[in-house]
Image 1: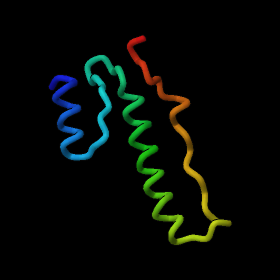
Image 2: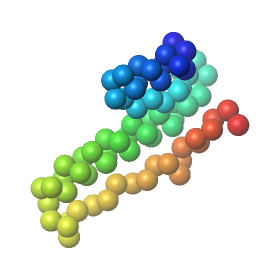
Image 3: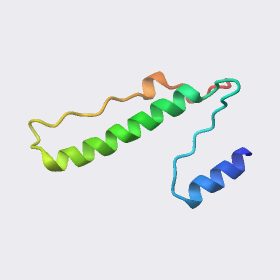
Length: 72
């Protein structure tokens, strides 16, 4: 699949697009961290509705570990 095909597919289905290669492992760590962050944010949003502000925990920012430009 080309990058453009992946982008179009992701846009069509309102999905996150992260380019990664299983063969070279390029972008795999970033993709995993981005996925975990999205799940944590979604979980935190649901949890925040069910808990008070005093007991709510914030999500961890994983972007600091993710290389946004793996080819540079």
